[in-house]
Amino acid sequence: MIPADALTRLKSARSIAVLTGAGVSAESGVATFRDPDGIWARFSPTELASMDGFMANPQRVLDWYAHRRAVVDAVEPNAGHTALVALERWITQRDGTFTLITQNVDRLHQRAGSRNVLEVHGNLVEDRCSVCEEIHKGEQQLDAAGLPVCTTCGGRLRPNVVWFGEDLPRDVWDASERAARDADVFMSIGTSSVVWPAAGLAHTARSRGAAIIEVNPTSTDLTPDVTWHIPAPSGTALPLIVAALEAA
Ligand code: OAD
Image (cartoon, rainbow, N blue to C red; front, side, top):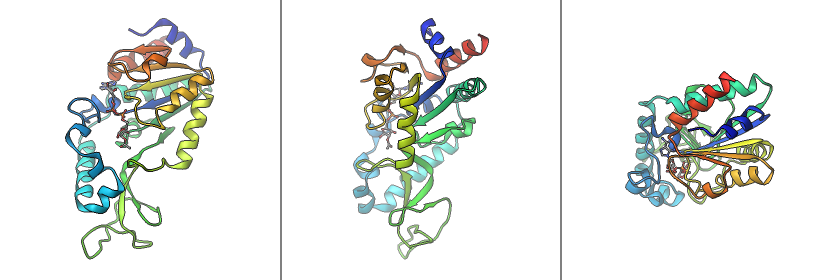
């Protein structure tokens, strides 16, 4: 299932960058966004993932994110997450570098034990002040309407998740681009590769000579440009890759 050439390229890599998407968490029981039963088939991104939607009905948005937090709190990292922890250990023990760039907001990579994780779309765990941008975790100061507000400036708190039309966190994005530029091997795992700028990272890596490995049961917009497409679930393919590297 894993092309021998892809394993050879990984074995000689000095720098691996990985971009993950919702598909990596699918086997933990977290819904993806664009599969037929996905989140955006059941919920409106305009209402639930935009500043306009938040301004129109903050309570509805906060309730929805509270529900999503409860969903991810109730699940566990899967074999794909665990294999990425082992891949990071494998290359760092060889003095190589490893960067895990994730579009996922569920923190399952960190719970599995991944260390160098860049969250380009934020996370579900934190809130952010919509006025002063301060990050908050768990404080509960409420305004007269019963909505959480910033303990520093009194601005309204919102989930620390990137919404449609918003910029990605600058430092995180700069580090992600650097990792893509420096990678010998770039792995795109469990993402439909339709959301930019994250989808552009594979192209950045490719333009600098990296080999691109895609792990996804289906083809994506990226597939025509990859070096190897492994058409399998990440929870199956990634443990096989790591076992082959560790056995070498
Ligand atoms: P999508 O839902 O767009 O794509 C999920 C991908 O995972 C699809 O290509 C599936 O084929 C694939 N997939 C499903 N099960 C899999 C498995 N077991 N192993 C590997 N792949 C599997 O999710 P993303 O690409 O992550 O943004 O979506 C990107 C962004 O769009 C998200 O971060 C989110 C969303 O709007 C924000 O919330 C800011």
